[in-house]
Length: 116
Length: 267
Image (cartoon, rainbow over all chains, first blue to last red; front, side, top):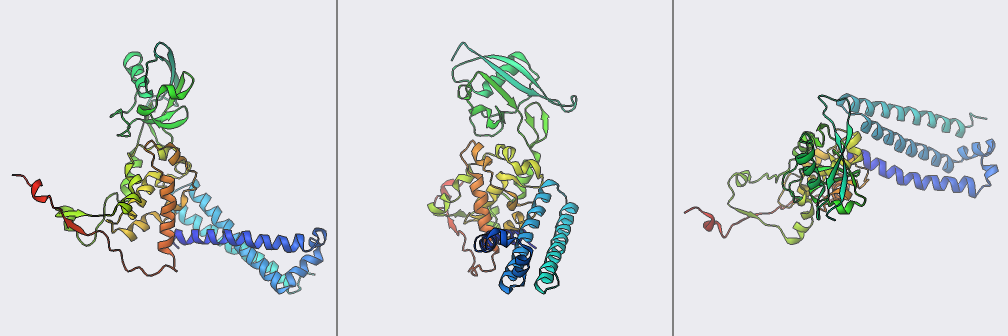
């Protein structure tokens, strides 16, 4: 993938993350009293709501994609060399996929009532 | 100003003999209009012939005497001692380059990076015109205005020595080369579009600039490399965008016969 494509992804996810985190905080910290919003049962109910659950999943993907791409950029500037560059690109991609998969698993388990 | 004294601290280092640099203090008699280069040359001529420094034109045109003066990259020939405040000046070699000796740094990698961006007009249709010109490529004043500041670069290396990305990423082309790449990409006479994009749209290319802006702050010729790099990013992003309208192709500048061609011929 071209570096300009990766940077497009970085910019788009940055803007999306700002918007989604704002919506998330408004929904959980303003519309619902904070003490209630962080209770276990309320958190579960958020996952079970189709719209809120989907928002959390999108937020998860956006923030992790942005964060891992940022980590990749830092590592590329830290050291140089073709092997290092290829290694960093692949390792960070696999780590991002694994983390997103683990997070998605949590979202799915909570949304389908498998976490009580 | 005549009559006073200047305390000039110079960083000395010979990598072939010493493990690390040290500072040496020289007392220089001040003169009206004295530049840091004048002070250094006085020290070299009268106090210590062993001081190594690079200089040539003494008028901020050649870019040879770039060094760190009181912590800031500057040209020694255009830096007035009187402008530096207290009568104590510290001179060190530029950062981000290996030291050859004292104030002389190795600029080979800098010029390699400059050469790496194909710093010349690339033409596809009329390569013969490049070898034996029959006329001139014309451009409008507006087209010239959009790139002219970048043509003032004297390749002194001050921008790259101040760049935080250049200090950590040896593969980063640096502000000088990237600004020059923008200058040629936007030159209507140049047809190297895609090749030029491929040169900078890489893991260690234009995207590694974090817009610290130090390159523009230290440029002795008033060039704004940071602006050039941001414009280059925008150009690359637009050119690579899937939503980009299909271009009808760049018309480029056509060759117009030189009306004075006959006058230039040798009798």
